[in-house]
Image (spheres, rainbow, N blue to C red):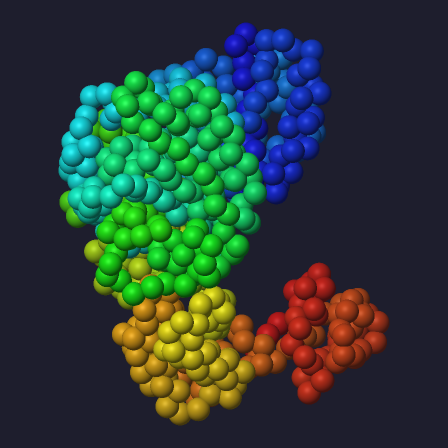
Length: 593
């Protein structure tokens, strides 16, 4: 049992699954075992198997999945103390020779972890562990061995492009801010992750906050900035707490503050908590929010590189972009270009959500196909249903159909489908998903989050939402599809910022690939996916119904009748389509048609 570490995944996903109870039980069990040390870490990506517990002995790592307090007791008794691995519960293992095993080894096969290199490995609240893994050595190199233009040149040569969705070359962006003269410059980290189904930035900040700080400080040196802000949404309390700890410990160690590494370079930063406005993901709205103004975009030029925060030259990148920088400086631009494609080098972190079996976080080389992400890493579709589409780019992204699943994920191929890369959220859909309702759902989100500054965005998205709502309620009219297309193109053309310019994407892409579903809703008043409640009837299969009466007891409008132990019947004139009959039936007798 010598030199044994027991590590619990204490990211938000783990805590939500009960990791705190598991940790507390392990703490009790290991209290009298001086050779075993208990610790915490961030998310390793296998969110679908949380809580995760790792037993690390030398170069051997054994990660157990779905660990409740009872299984934790077995792990301590049989593995930690008895030396016997619980094979049936091993999710992932790595040996000293790099061999991999466990039920979830396929989840990791295609991955290359650069941004996530420390997530799920190090204690994010312990700066010493980050240092032992080479942390802040890239900063030392940048400050003591490189000139600012060399730093920018290295980032340019790496081909790193902004991972927040725009894909703009990072080194070029830094060079713009470096080129303007001012008495003060700023570095901003956009951690205002607001896309439904996206949790990449949160997991990085919770699992490896020092990598983001190090990247920001290097950027500050490159462009001549002395202060930075991390704009993090207040809905990420754990990420904010770990950032606060990281900033305090970095100051204590001398990585923040004055004369860092004796180089004469001064840099410090602070956290600004966002209030949940989706539009503040747009950099000029974000800057306005930091300044204490209402978060609304402004016309560009001038761009923030020339006149950003308080009118000073400012560089803004997202969490993932900054987290790449220390690795690039430490390993060189050429090493980074070994991964990905010629025009989209490096890796990309994706959040897999929706109807995929293995929901979680994965980092793969650019150019990996959608199919590989969904089936090889994501494990395929829940209940083995048919794969229908994937939503990429968040609510402003687009729906890519299954027939295009061999599309490489990069900054050239994804826009060609009508979608956008976005920050990396991927919402997977099966054949029970109505694409018209999906378009309505995402447009409802962006319409609600519109700041209202642009007429086309404020009113145009509302008109589109009204049309989509009518269609999903069986009140669609001839010409609605064409009306949605015209409105969508006008909104894209006339809106000021990225929110309005991309808000119609879910509608336009679903019309492009699933026009037949729109036509069925309008002409036949039917929903092919059986999803839109107003367009389906509920029935009970008399062959399956045993007359248990549960459906009748749970019906809020008394629309179900029948005698005990005999098949029941639903009166669809009374039915309000709440689906409680389906969820309460234990025999699969209730269905929609």
